[in-house]
Image: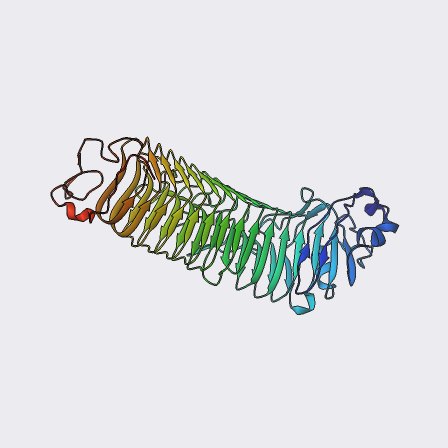
Length: 465
């Protein structure tokens, strides 16, 4: 067929092992002759069957060979067997794709060029652009994926660029996923790996669902700005129950309307080494999370969305969360650095908390929070405590904050071996009058007439030993 010679094929090497790991795509030579496609492109993989798709083959015949590729991706999927590799040449494919059933296990969809191989159903049937259902070990790589349905329900936009339901092991790699209801949605799907994608401008969430995710090396930006009956709208990443032990690492997560990352009701998440910036409410929002690790992230300029007003906004926001570790993050220029509310036994260590508009750390109705070996500088208030018990604020560098180093209102705990940046410690010789019903207080004690609230455990030495 003449149309096939107009195309440029990129060498795609997809290592696919059912039940095992998947090797990423590698690019190689262009302008491969059709006669050499099978032995050259797929020489290093174990493909049971290789099928080709080209939207230029309008007249047919269509049998999925290099000479007679299918015109639609769905035709190729329907005729694929277990372990098939489908190679889709550049073009615009105006269709919704369904991959369903275990007779499609191990299927690999490979676009020639993610900028030029476009799947866009134009919201014609109000469906997901790609629907993966009850199938295991699928790969989707090398596409622009857009144009899903925009149906709106009480929980947000219900259709997605890719929707994964009830399966094990999908690898979504090196795609551009934008202008859908949601970018990627996982519903009761185990082991969804999402890497090296650009996920942007989806009306609700960039990535969402209650599945186990591995989300690494993606650009996730400007999601959640759709107009729905309820406001605010979506997050960069939104994950909830049944998503335990997910990882979110090495991503750039920026300019999403609500939260950069919102985790609810999850255990054992790792959020590490991300750049999280300019998200409306919080950079990271952990709600009812347990035993999660938030470490080595750059978290800047979050919490300034105009829709949120008096809502708690912060670089890191914890609510009703327990036994989490926040360590070695740079938390800079957010509305609040850390906002910890109605939470207990969280451990905050080794962070650099600088230049946040309100508080470096705000502990509200918390218990047994440990704050150790951090730097708090150039915040309005370094640390605020309100109805906080059992806290330990030890071995921190707390200096040159604009108002106070420490404000404790109904706060019982210890603050020892900190460097306060001046000979007087946190108390600068002034008292603070808070609005009623609060009494006149020192910035480190609930009431200067009732020093027992300090428990005798506040230590304001200039130099930390």
